[in-house]
Image (tube, rainbow, N blue to C red; front, side, top):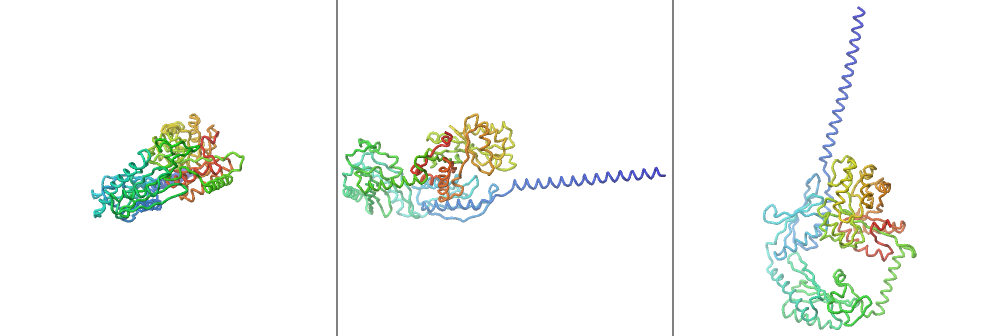
Length: 555
């Protein structure tokens, strides 16, 4: 009996143990399933997360409005609407632009597209609008459509418009023939392309002529001849003059039907003069004068003739001011502080139209791989004497399995993969001298992948600049450990995209250069940045700084 009882108790204990095990297993399984569901929901959220860029796209719309206003184009704006495009929440808008005549259609559209492009906005052409009648194109930022522009010819034509345009073309010929026949040869006159002008209802062209004339030619005689020639060909006209005695220049603005059609800019010179830096004028003034500078500044002073004492005194005052500027940043007797500027994110703009390549070639151009103009830009920049760099894309998000660029390096890649991606990117850049990182908030914090990357730079004898996109970046230290010549950037110039902030950051960069002896600033291929650099970089030497390529900072 006791044996049976013991056996029964033992069986109950076994069943109890089994039940406990089953319950624990079921709890664990439930927890696992629950965790898996949470993970699936999170992944689904990340894949479908909508990025809100409405404010950013609104800023680009402000630029579009400004461009249309600047060009005086007759237009209708159909208002904003918020849409989701490529998982981005954007402010979209549609513009109808009316051009007053087919005669100026192509030139106006080309000028409009150029200004939009210079504002950093992409253009995607479309053969026709939804109606099949009005030609259209889309405006994009980072691959996302933010606007549509429809362009048509105004249906209600002003009766005088075609007559005004005809007079423009005829008038250019009349003035050109007048100048060539009586005053200059074909090699001594510079002529701009016609510039389309509009007041919102009428459209016409404005052209500029620039030439050198002897100081012996009387201004009143020239003006009398000009008036006589115009009056013999046209009825409703007017001429306004603007003379600068100090620069020895004079400007004639010619109006037809109250519209400024032509500007004639004249630089006067003495018939017989010698100068230490300017050779005597012989057959062609174009070859003897610094014509490129003249065109760039349009009618800026080329040289002062017979300088008066007051002018000499003014020039000395200017030199004294420049010396004070130099002393402000640099004590006499010391080496000039060195400043280097890198322009990042090159490759998205057509280099033949990019104003960045008109900057001094003492800056560095850093080019992204795998973009439309990567190879063209590197070749063009190299030809113009810029120091060319690779702007290497690096992982910036945790858990990323694919980069934004085909050549982007990720931390989950093997050493072989990282090195192959790096070599593929470098092969796209002609004459590459160094590298800096594009993004890399994750990659630059991870030592082993960085070592794999830096070994390629060491092998190819390239320098590295850590863009320092995140605090605690290890890129500079790893580069130094591997034996790669390396630096860290000191300041981003255009993180806050206003003219005042960019100038303020340039001043900070100078102060860093004075303190350390050298400084590295990073800007981007943005029009406002380029404009500020055009204004400020020429002043650096006068202020006692030396603008140099990055490679010169290692000397």
